[in-house]
Structures are given as structure tokens and as C-alpha cells.
Length: 83
Image (tube, rainbow, N blue to C red; front, side, top):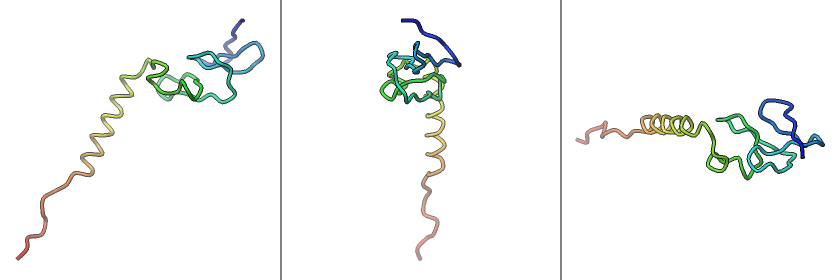
């Protein structure tokens, strides 16, 4: 079977139905990975599943977000002293 690329990183079959970039199954509902901008079916969308090329940047982003959340919700000592 012949594949045709019509737009950036989306693969279509001869009949115009889009295909998953990982498993190559025909699917009407494809979602884009926000890290590598490829289209995947719902099963292959997880970054570990499709072996995302930008998995390191995704990890760095999530670690940065976790650090910010920890600092934001940091607990402090008692502010009022009981008499």
C-alpha cells in the first residue's frame, strides 16, 4: 500500500483516511503529541508508547512545574505566638 503525506507529519492512506504515525492504523480521530507534533491514535498518544523524540524536554518541563508547585505551596512556621 502506498502512503501520501499531505500536511506536516500526518500520514494518509490512498483513501484519504489519516493513519497513526506509530502503529499505522487507520483512524478518524488522531491527536497531536504536544512534544513532537506528530499525530497518533488514542492508544499510541502516550509519550512512552510512541517513543517521543522530545521526551527529555517533556521531563524537564514537568520537573520545573513540580518545583514551582512545591515552592508555591511551601509551609512556613507558626506566624502567631500564643501567649
